[in-house]
Image 1: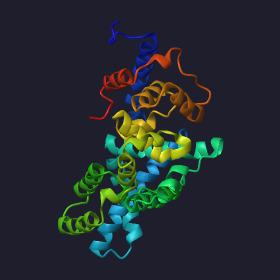
Image 2: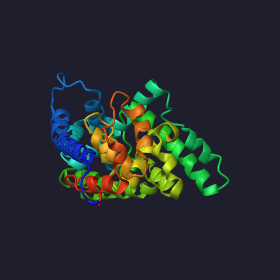
Image 3: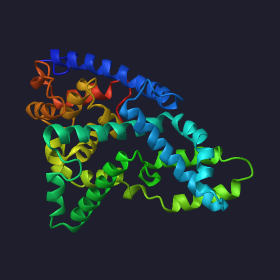
Length: 315
């Protein structure tokens, strides 16, 4: 038997993944246009508002640091006068835009599952179990994750994104964007403000850094994190990204109803058995059935199909 030959379900999932990739390719240009539009009355979608709100908050934090260092009397007035231009430049960075978009999608998923399946968006059974662990390192990391997740839900409700919660590359890009557009004759002031911002930044202490450390430290036990009802949305998405070798942002977007092929392949590639994949679909997409023959799809084949999909898998 030729083990490398496609089985029918692989062709179905490969086609579905290609369609999903085409959709993903339009996400940044479309949402970039929507959030940059001066009149969003036709586009009242909650996620668009979330993305623009996060960009506004990031800009305000950098401008606050600049105004404080410059000794501005009217700090809020200074921020208002400079914010729109900086927001526009931040949203011109597709990676920054994609990150904010994924956070908004994650928050919406968490709230949706809370309403539909009573899955707590902050405290999950897995988090509780790890907090009670006899291993001090595991317990303290789980406690830190709990606190960070509680802040995330609260901050997202206010459309906020603290600078220290940005991944390292995006923190650097945001600061560089601000420095580039800070205005003439302000090099010394912005340099001092930047030093303070960088001194306060610790990627490992961010919510995403803590989630990654928690899941990575679970080793073989990380399979428990691939149950959204047991692990909660945040830990589940981190485990899905790590287990399927994808960027977390792509793992988040795979939960969208136009990315069902990617989600099915990701769960299988991460190590779930077909029946377990079906169980996760009951929570995330209860109205969607897996294609016939999915139970024949091997884990390695799912990973190969994902890796070959338009360069969307993480390197």
